[in-house]
Image 1 (cartoon, rainbow, N blue to C red):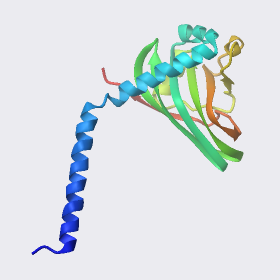
Image 2 (image 1 turned 135 degrees about the vertical axis):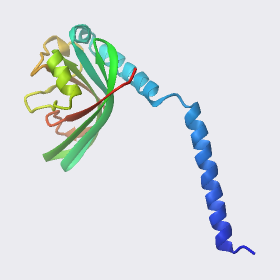
Image 3 (image 1 turned 90 degrees about the horizontal axis):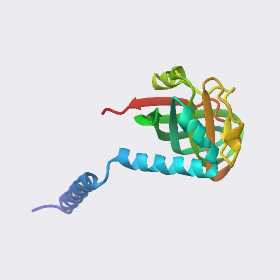
Image 4 (image 1 turned 90 degrees about the vertical axis):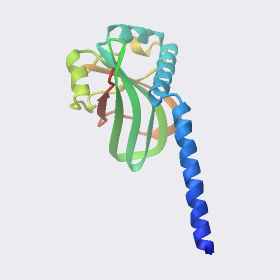
Length: 186
């Protein structure tokens, strides 16, 4: 005769197994995460171009670019930011990237924004891909707005544009951002 505890463990195990199998089946039917990320990146690019049509020049002339559809940033004294995106070279998808940032100092709040990084030179793109690239304090982001890119210039081989999504934060810098690049296998 089974005890109540054995029946409960059996039910929980059975329920867990059923949920796990259904999640495996659902994941098989779900479009790939990369395809979803690519769609999100394409929508972000269109939003940047709609906000500032002059960005077309950067897309046409850059050696490559990285698009982070959503970067979440928050802090109270100590803060951080994180986002994932895709990297393109001459318009062709070459990899995935992760952005992280840790900040210390006067800051308060939270925000979500999109970030677009253009690489002026092959050297700047290669440094990014090799993990030797980090945003320095000398690099500042241009808030995307109509005509904002007309006067934007590359600094240290990169030009950075941001587009606010939600939230409010006192402190909005890109200095100190670090990146991890993962190539996409063809």
